[in-house]
Image 1 (cartoon, one colour):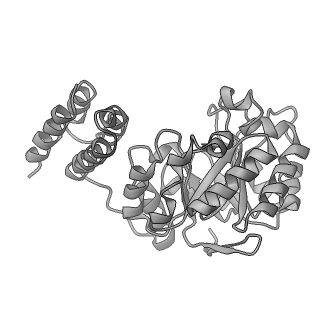
Image 2 (cartoon, rainbow, N blue to C red; image 1 turned 60 degrees about the vertical axis):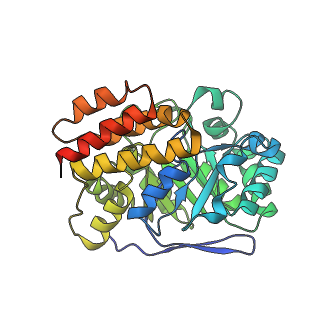
Length: 330
């Protein structure tokens, strides 16, 4: 595997440097400010993302909570926008930039039907001219770099990802992230890293590989096959905010990372729960349940603990369960 270097991007007057080759993907309902706080604990320099933002909602003010506090956070944080209307994308990008976004990423790969049905996300894979127009208009409207996330195409029969990526590059995209599946595949089957490598060969701008990267071994293999400039980690990091830092450490320094043990995982779940409850009240428990269910795995008694946690009816009950579990590991 080649030695990875920092990735340099140039916006419309503003340059950016991505120091860490392992990037945290936007995750709907997951990658909020509190989750990013934990990822930062192990990955101080990594590029992280807010949850994917509906440009129309941000334009109207309904999505501001996802970006309003960006300037207060440490480290680079991108905002990924989706919509098919250039004017909405421009207005949202300007708002995100003014809130402190490190860069703007345009989503052209989300396979969710309710997004694609309205022309956003992966639907843009079927309309290269509109995709290029959005990139061009947004790039001209803001000073920070514009990047794009795509898939290999809408379906195998019509896929031409090289031409699509080249069009985005010509329109002003500074970096492209490629998920190695078509929209029709969703998350089924295997990511096609060889197809990503062909796109990488055709581009002059950096490329980030995405899809089926669950650990350092996967990351190294993916980088060897694709020759990408970095990797993006998505679903594998749910419940494992240390994963970005772990992969970065192991691919750079070839050192074995100390994966959190049972006590650390329980303590992390407790801290996460308290922060969510402090910020969102009792609703924070509902959000915390999925995080606790993901994190409390891989140790003796984890299954029983998860069973009790998802049935806890109050924050205090869940906190007591976690505190009692912690005492077992002292």
